[in-house]
Amino acid sequence: YMAPEQARGSAKVDVRADIYAVGAVLYRMLTGRAPYSGDEPAALLASLLHEVPKRPRSVEPSIPIGLEALVQRTMARTPEDRPADALELERELA
Image (cartoon, rainbow, N blue to C red; front, top):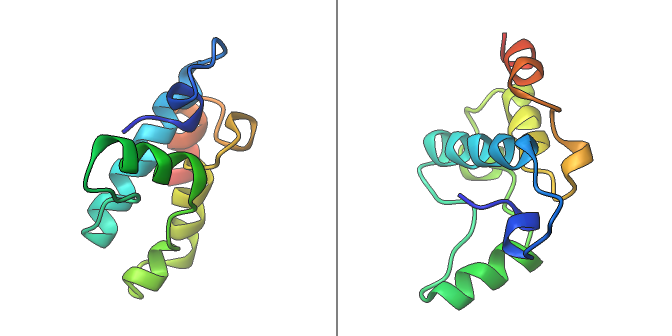
């Protein structure tokens, strides 16, 4: 799963793009759905760049609120709003 800054071709891609990818995988695992949709690569890219995924609990209500918040934080559009690195993400998952 590609982070928005990667999709835009930003030169400022760092470890937080990987945090985004982890969040997208968690989203898929928890909801059974991909966070974005599109039949063609261009439509999928447009969805990634311009849409906000549905809240995980709106898809699967049994997801704990705290876990939903973490998934949403890992998938924040702005890298600065995501956990800074894997250690921070690990602490938040614990």
